[in-house]
Image (tube, rainbow, N blue to C red; front, side):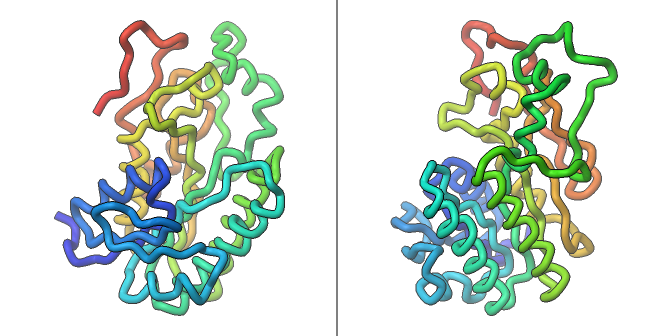
Amino acid sequence: MAETQKAVLVTGMSGIIGGVAGRDLAKSYRVSALNRRPVEGFETVTADITDLNAIRPAFEGVDTVVHMAAYLGGDDQQQLEVNVRGTHNVFQAARESGVRRIVFGSSGSTMHAYETEEPFLAMTEARLANIPHPRPLLTHLDPPRPDSLYGAVKLFGEALGRSFAEQHGISVICVRLGRVRAEDRPANAREAAVYLSHRDAAQVVRRCVEAPDSVKFDIVFGVSDNFTRFRDLEHAREVIGYVPEDGIKEWPLPEGWKAAG
């Protein structure tokens, strides 16, 4: 069993991924939350991540931070306040408190513009006849291509993570998360290509938390093994041992389909 006394702080635990991951980690670790409202069943510091002084107490005695708090809407100012200033505050408070590792919830949106071009467009539209063999895959080494401010600010978080890893010695693992829905099923062909099940979301975060200390900085994709997947999973397997248990095998989904686990 993992170290039962290790303290893990989850930001944004009232969200889908933060909630799924936090509750899974609580099976092995002492999990607390940093959230704008209390999280039932967990010690919670209620504060906004844009207020550095207010969030500092949440980091006391914490070994690992899972940073999932984010603004997903269309207000540019909020994007900058929450996803830039707020993320910097989380990293800064973690550094001040001696946190060993930060798991940063990044996004596939950092690469979204690739999906406007073939062959990736065919994969998001489930046009199997137009998908070449072997299947093309985007890796963490391909140049980022965000097509929104949200994708760009997530790249800021990744760059900030590398800076903190190199300048302050904090281990930072960035997970470019796929599409996670509350109902745990994709809504369209594009989502079927980038689907991340609740079970796999919990696994990829846990693998990051439990990765060897030798992982000082890295970027991995977090998606399930979908039949039209175009995001690489081999690097995540090599670095953190992530092997998805779930995946969308066809589209449209067969009648009666439900997520495993």
